[in-house]
Image (cartoon, rainbow, N blue to C red; front, top):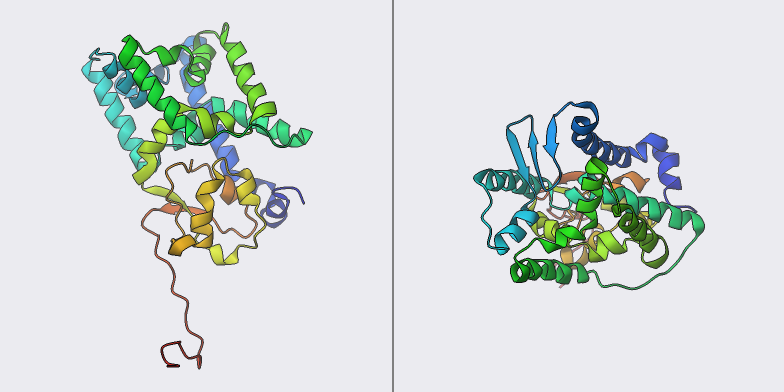
Length: 297
């Protein structure tokens, strides 16, 4: 049976795609805010994902870019630090990799490649360790320190795509096309899940975030495996869903993107958004008349 069919049958099409639609609305809405100025002269947001002003007073700075800038031994203006502090506080609350699933425009490209890959029945691909992204993250920071420039931003597909949509893509289209083809033919979720240093950086921020996906009704799981199929980071699901080593139902892994895919695809409504504090393991009540092992001694 195709992935998600049971969810559509149980919840209807909208119910089985609610969080996907909200994510797309968020990603396209953020792009629209940036594009309104250049295209329509309505300057609600000025700048790009690196640094922006909202309503001419609220600065927002990418903390990853700020860190690279500091390593180049250039001291940014105070407003850059204020903007980074605001962004850091937000992602520490809702989860760092929310950036990947709710903000990053490249996510729409990789999702489109994944959708087409499934329709074409392309299987397998190159095996790339998920730890690779952290090595690349470290290399970008060393590169900034060694060269005195934010050199990674010249090749960062996230920045190139967002700047290109606002100021013109130029050769950036070749990079995005290459990324699409890489996801389609070489490695599904290869960029976002295994290589992207931006996602690696934001996962570090999300380690202690407040908002979490929880498998609150995990006892209702029918082992259909649909959640594992759709999750871009499937390794984060099992501990919470199956109570591995006594784990509670909250997905605490830093690489959970809080995308809501598992919520959408589950026909049994096992998953929901909650907080990291709802992680107590429910005690199983003892049936009446049944003796505990201690009482049998």
